[in-house]
Image (cartoon, rainbow, N blue to C red):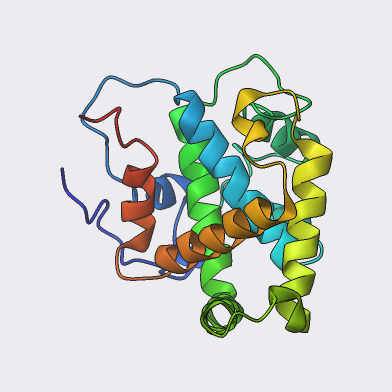
Length: 209
């Protein structure tokens, strides 16, 4: 597997690339997959949830990058984005349709470009959460971190089905905070060298073996 993906440089200016060139940044998986496993749908939706908690108007930011990255044919509008994300089986509004590999690639690419834009904020929140954990100080003591965690918990509780077995382990604010922090780590990982490609491949661990 070629981790470098397509021939374009990571995070090139999207204005000089077509949608096809952007999608080619992500490597082929080397397996005959036409649609994504349930775990992949879940992970993509959760990391987008973290973006929405980080930035007010996160959905509009996602749609804005879809247009800027020439992926509007895949991520067409707000309703289309909602339907794609509702392939996450843990959602209240779960839709029994498959997430295509092309749709997943588009969302991963958008995620990584948004994460790059928010790198400074993400790194600051990660550092602060670590410092507070080490000093055994409640995370709520840091205003911006507390705001992110509160929004993430609210988004999660309003959109996920509490009756699903995968949600039962996340029934406390403490567990949701841990999930929110771990997603910050994944977003920061996306901004690193070949982070986009490595994040993409990580979504299929277990499937590729």
